[in-house]
Image (cartoon, rainbow, N blue to C red; front, side, top):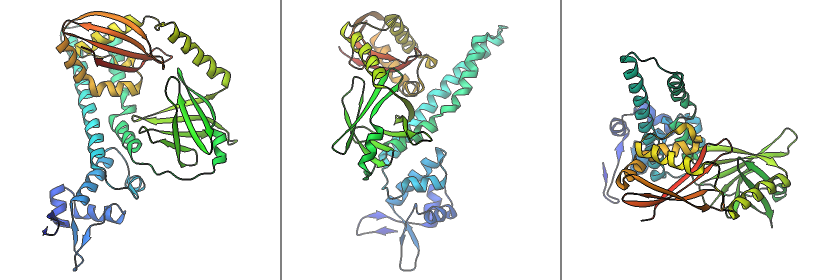
Amino acid sequence: MTDHRTNAIWLTAAQCAKRTGLTVRALRIYEAAGLLAPLRTEKNWRLYGAQDLARLTEILTLKRLGLTLEQISRLLAGQTTDLDRVLSVQASALREQIVRVQQSLTLIDNMQTKMATGEILSTDDLLALARDHSMTETTSDTIAWRRYDQMRPRTERAIDSRLYADYAGHYRLDTVVFTIRHEDQRLFARVTGQVELELFAEEVDRFFYKAVPAQISFIRNAEGMVTSLTLHQNGYEETAERVETGAAATLEATLAERIREKRPVENSRLLLQELVHQHQKGEPDYAKMTPPLAAIAREQAEIIRGELQRLGALKDIRFKGVTDDGWDVYDVSFEKGCQEWSFSLASDGLFDGMIMRRTM
C-alpha cells in the first residue's frame, strides 16, 4: 500500500512479518509492550511504515544483545529511534566477533599443527587456550549493549542540590584521580591531566556528561555515605574508590614530577617496540591490555596492521615526552613514513591506552 501524500510505503501486519522474518504474533507482542504503535485504518487494520521498521531493527538488535522485552521496553520508553546509533553498535559487535573468531581459529590451527607433528602442547599453549575460552565474561554482545545504553540521549532532571556535597571529593581509578566538586548548585568532574567538565543529573546518584557519551554513578555504603563512583564509557564500567585529599595530591604530584622531568615509565621504549612488532604481524597480545583497550584494539586490528604494512619496516623509536595525563609519547619512523605513538600503563603494567597518528 502506498500513501501518495508522503510517498511512503505501508505494510500490513502479514506483509511486515513476512519481509522481516518475524511472525504476526511477535508484532502484536511488541505492540502490547508499547514498543510499536502502527497506523490504524478505518477498518482497524494495522499498517507499518518506515519508522516502525526502524524501531523493529532497534528491538531486534537489543534482543540479540541479550536484553529481555521488559528491559527493552524500559530502555526505549519515550525515546525516538536513532537508527544510526543502532547500526553503529551492531556493526561494532559484529566486527569484534569476526576478529575474535579469526584469533580463536588461528590459535586452534596452531595447536592442531603441533599435535599433528607429535609435539606436546606446552603449559603456555594450554593457558592461552583457557584464556581464549574465558573471554566470554566480557563478550562483544555485552560490550555492544553497554555502548548502546551509554550512547543513548539522556534527560536532565532536577535533584536536591544539597546532595552535591555528598559527591564532592577525590576518587582513584588506578593511576588517575577523579576530582568532583560543586559550585552554585552545579557539579563538575576533572580527571588527572584533563579539563574539568560539568555533570548533569539523570537521577539521584546518577549523572551524565553532555560533552562526551559517558556517565558517572555514585555508590553509597549501608550508612548512606558515598564511597566510590563508577564510570560508564566505551561499553565498560570502571569503579574508582574514594580517597583522602592527601592521597590524591600525592598521586597527582608524582605524575606532575614525571611530566616535568620528561621521565618515561620503566622499559617504556621496549614495551612500545614490542607493541609495534605485534601489530605489524597482526598478532597483538590482548592479554597485556586492559579489557576496554583490548576491545577497541580488536576492532581496529586490521586497520592498524594495514597501515603498518604500508609504512614498511620499523627503523627507529625516539622518546618525545609525557602528556599532561601521563601518556608516554614517541616518534616512530618506518621505511616509508613516520607516526607518533602514545600509550599509558595501568598500575598492574597492562596497557590501558594507545593512540597512533601519522606525522609524515
